[in-house]
Length: 170
Image 1 (tube, one colour):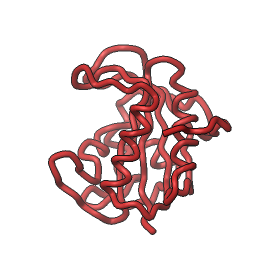
Image 2 (cartoon, rainbow, N blue to C red):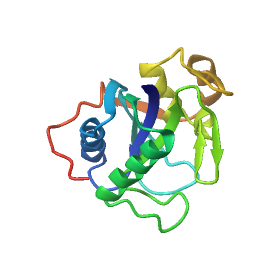
Image 3 (cartoon, one colour):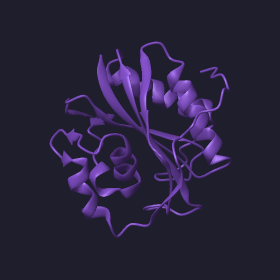
Image 4 (cartoon, rainbow, N blue to C red):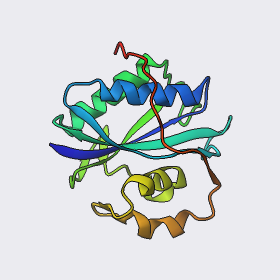
């Protein structure tokens, strides 16, 4: 089993409910166990426009490979109506594989750790909620990276990304 971290975000539709339901979908998958959930945060879009995003992160214990976990995340995004009309477009749901154990993967469509995670408050603050001492391979300790994003607007809006009981059909 591998511990992985997934970032969730949305800024279209009922973003809060989409994130909660996506966590339920993840938890219902064979080979995936949610072992930690961050608080929910509101942040401004970066390199994009549109409404503020809601973001959180989950820690999962998984028997899936990094590739399988990414495929699952993309499938859940599609289930929630994710479209990709252009780079950084507003989204109904975004799931990013942030960290996968101590692996470093550099493939055209799979880069782990996520290449921009150390630059984003909306990733680091949720990670700090569940794993402040996590040493991200090749990047550094989460708690040590937080000062570098202190100038980015981020607001905690809810404690915990408490999931609802909706069943996932993905």
